[in-house]
Image 1 (cartoon, helix red, strand yellow):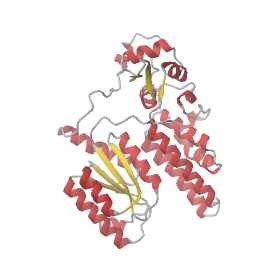
Image 2: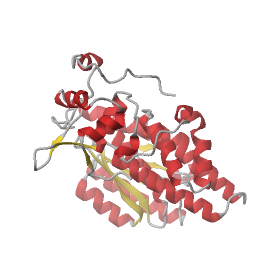
Image 3: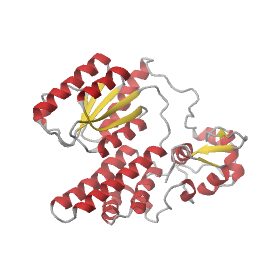
Length: 327
């Protein structure tokens, strides 16, 4: 399992991606992979930076287990086409390793997390829920699948590189809504879009959410809605959030399976998103508009993905592999 601050040596990384240690060190010297120095002066690399390099350059992993990832699957090339069906089978069987392998194969193949969530993870969880409802799966199988999925999302969060802007995003679910998986996925999608996103968790009282908005004034505040205890109370609580966001200059974003059309007509928000891909599109557009006005600060030390020409300038005999089309 990935550790949030785990450091690995150049030798480990070279073996994991199948190149010589000398070539890897030259890439580091060129800034293609960010490194840190230990107290003893040894060069180390953060797991998220290594995975960012692998994804940016479409570089295969020969021995991913050296980086705390599942072994390479011989079915990896099936991609999104069979991803959902394979994940449903693995989750119902309680096979956490295979489930994690399926998701990370897609992640390393450069599929956006929003697409992985929409087309594979959410689709698989909903399919298992439908089987339970139709008595084709036991309740323990459905709950176990949710727990495995939650751990996978947590590991994906650890594999993500920190965003390079100062724009924050916060959110969660209102009191009585205990569904934690959707809001956890929203956090990752917004981080992928460039926000310093943090989920506040599930079942949070409205007054506590209002305080979070007032104290932090995030660029985006999201509310994931998978369950509503009482329609009238929900509309009143949401109105409090809407007023707080308007005062703070925060974009209020909402989504979830429990939001019926008649409820949405009584709510005020900046965006309603049916899918994670819609959320990502909205977030990137909003961040782009703020960048254009100069209201977004970027980390000057954050590595920018190099162009093909700059990679060629390394002079290495073992260069990052050319990009291949994702399945």
